[in-house]
Length: 261
Image: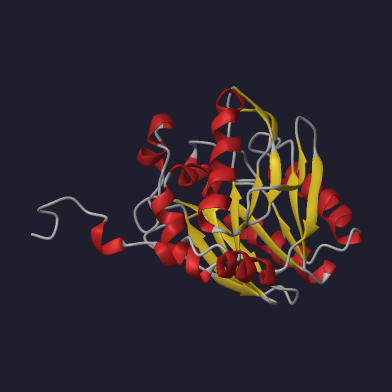
């Protein structure tokens, strides 16, 4: 299956403009043969702490993603803000070619350094979605810094989607952690980041598709772009069969004395 990440310059808190930008890139990706198209975290608004305001756009954003999937006849994943029981939720939803929602993930780790935890409710569970012949697990931005999350889903995952608004000043961490998550879990990783300025922060993108050995399939930086490539779940099975790193884990020992009490 060919997958594509849309590296967007997100217009700050302007969903209508961002729908136009995302649509243009998505059509490029579909013409290139992509069957799964992935948009960044909060692609309709940027990474805003105006959570209540952003959540007001949840309905139109879901409708846009569903219509995009249906019109192009592909699978689409994208990040947006939706209302929650206590606070709004930082969400990644996935839609099938018929426009139906096939999965939804809420960001488990709000970014406390930016105060996200004060404005957004944390998610409570991992989600893995079958997309054609792929097992796809979406995560969001700061989740990338928590290898435990990836490891918990690794055996049931062929492709991790990491959607983000990751700023330029921490771009070394973004590139390094994406590669580490691919290598240590022997899975494909598609990291989809924005470019341009948002919330006073410049972003360089560094959107990348990595294979189960952490090798680059395609990448882009600085400008809006479509990053795409063919991925095959058989490559995940082959990597894990030949290099049995996951099978060699000893999770019963990965605790300190007294943790069992």
